[in-house]
Image 1 (cartoon, rainbow, N blue to C red):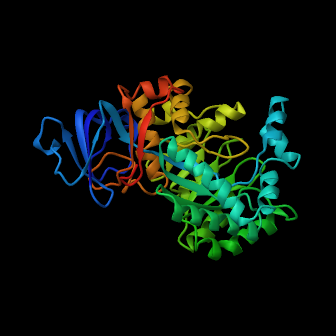
Image 2: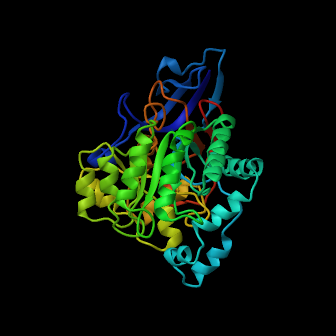
Image 3: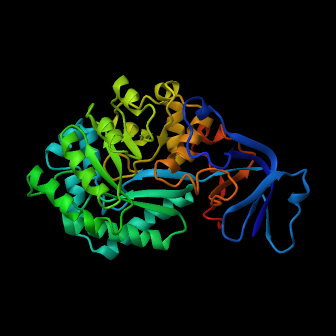
Amino acid sequence: MALILNIGELVGIVPEGVLRKQGAEMSETGTLRNAWLRIAPDGTIADFGSMHTSEAIGSGTEEVIDAEGGLVMPGFCDSHTHIVYSGSREGEFLDKINGLSYEEIAARGGGILNSADLLNATSEDELFRQSIERVEEMMAAGTTAIEIKSGYGLCPEGEMKMLRVIQRIRENVPALVRATFLGAHAIGRGYTKEAYVQEMIDLMPRAAEYADFVDVFCDTGFFTPDDTARILEAGARYGLRPKIHANELGVSGGVQVGVAHGALSVDHLEQTTDAEIEALTGSGTMPTMLPGSSFFLGIPFGRAKEFIASGLGIALASDYNPGSSPMGDMRFVMALACIKMRLTPIQALNALTLNAAYAMGVSDVTGSITRGKRADLILTRPGWTLTRIPYTYQTPWIRSVFKKGRS
């Protein structure tokens, strides 16, 4: 057990049973000043309260941590990453500087296909070594739950290699990890689209041994809503719930096909209309926006405030990948949300913690300060406030990151 005392502010308190926030709830979060928090032996949050109560006295058998006025908040939950990849695509960075668009680079055989070539030429052990370095980087920056996608194999052997590496990561880090089969990320070299879709459908039983979710890049120049529906239906037969890439490059119909198939989340949403808001209203699907991709590619940011004003919730994720968002710092995502999307720090916090946990199916066990949930926590240096985190977004701020109660 451990007891954290003298917390300047405990932020992100959510009652038991609340799994996501929507509409006006996005602007609310429970807070407690001058607080303590107790971590149970199993790594969950045992209790918390005011320093004025008798429970703030240590038992004598537990570790006591003096927060010295630092802020404690839930760890970040990153519900959309592509961090299992090999090498770098920095050459394409120069292409972007010279004016080529994401679509133009892809049309020339670059983009995702370049990552697939590199990955398939890399051993499984080396791929694991490179990828776990990124996980460690993310955890050090405050991320305590991570969803990781395949999708850079683009052939059965490459996709299974990626899923095995994700499983190894899951077994070797204290963060909570979920795996997504994204075989339909692009059309693999040497395939027609129809043949590739069928190949990924045929691979589903093997992929389901490792994956929690199935995903499709349903967007302009990639997979159509009809392709997507076929793949999602195949995934459902093996217990894989959908998570969709949609509306990054155009209004693709991906949101609607995702909602129709019970997708846990629909992600990107840089290009949306009121029809997408209408389709999401009343559904169990979490709209997830990726401001790091908007920043790096110079494309529109998602209409987060309009979604919230319409009564929806949103999640935010890093989209950490080598081509369109090569970073996994969720604090920078929070800063982009506040600066570019005009979310308040509380709205951004909810989108990066509880709602992001919901978007990866784990908001019942992490994503908030709630008794019984995992003690996945960030303890800041003394004197920090929630608003200061995205405001001075490069100033060192973290004192400790707890993953299931351990720092």
